[in-house]
Length: 106
Image 1 (cartoon, helix red, strand yellow):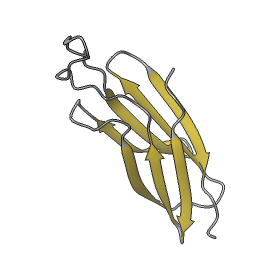
Image 2 (tube, helix red, strand yellow):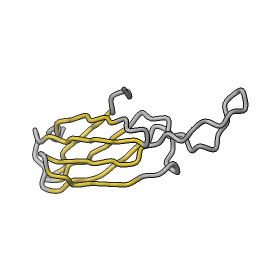
Image 3 (cartoon, rainbow, N blue to C red):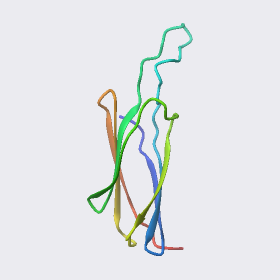
């Protein structure tokens, strides 16, 4: 199982500023290991972000995204205490879901 995502959601008016760091190797299938063997493809294919159960972001990625990808987005109509759920699925069938709560303005 992959490491937990780091998700921060802070409120700015009625907009949640969401920042997500996903731990994943994101192998392109073009690099070689120390023995000269090609490292097989291993990358996140799908990322879904939901706000209180409603999908607000759905993306299809490829091997062109860097290792440990960072994603930032803004969600209108958010309130302190709302739930943000992030789920990714990779090309090997691995899946990770994590949740954060929108923090009130500081």
